[in-house]
Image (cartoon, rainbow, N blue to C red; front, side):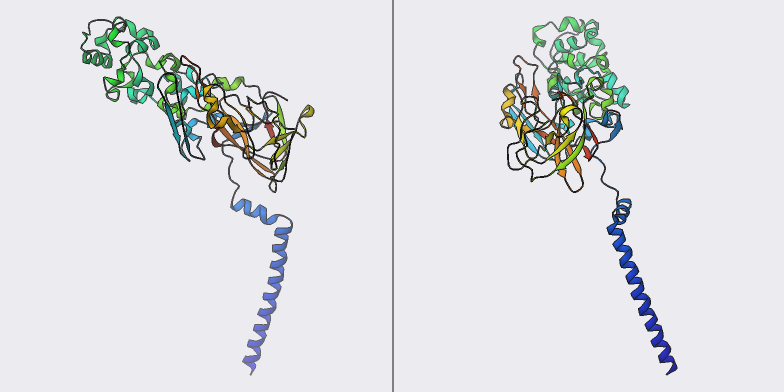
Length: 402
């Protein structure tokens, strides 16, 4: 009997403790939720997702960390394809896939006349910026060599013209296979009619020769080669991984016009007319006259406060110019070009509950260097992840100011 009473007492005490701990645990959990402790704890266990690209905060606001950004890391979030005419090589077809780097399908000509100044670089500069040794490369690694002729090669590398053909192995093999004696200088032979339209890469296999087998190729600017515009980014050794702090043109961009993310607002917003977004063709004050205009209101100097940057997922605007301007129905997502004409910054996803704004990069295709300037498509190649902002974060707005 005594043992039964003891056992009953122990069970009763255990039950009381269980009820007490349950109440305390409930209060503790309630406090976690009520005062945000729970959210902070989860944040420590599962840190928030990093921004799409590395950024730095400075007196100019949140800016990309150009020293950690390159073409190879810019990944497409959608797939697509287009076909269009060119001035020199007939119809072009561009195909891209989700997860693919823009370096694989975007071409040097797409960035012609932009602040990046890619075409003014040479292989020596790229090698210094990336640490890639040109001694390990083949001629075939430099894509644009595939369509160079002897005259165009001499034009790109003038010093080559004074060298005897027999002293440059790939040129010697090329000339010999064309049935021409190799007892002259490369410059002399480049004037022969037979070489005017014969591409070197169509006669010899460029993968058989070291890149450095052509003297002076390291120091020749990209834009000195014939039809350089049609090389892909990754067709230039090292260019895909060259960080953008090595592109001096970016330093000249005026980023003094800065606002702040004031109030992210969602899909319920309609008919916004006091905008600060649009395109370089339609202007940057294109109203959103539709039933859903998610946007962020901005704060800033002058009458910037209260102006709206509309989400590019909600609104398309006129873009592009020339023959290529008609592609994609002449439409591109609304946004701004605060970092120049190489790409467009577009507000994409707006989360009111979190006070967050996600932006994307959009690119375009161009063909501007032939006999006829075909212009550029709208900025519709994207999205590629860019900068994420939260309420009160500074955001560079670029020019024009209004």
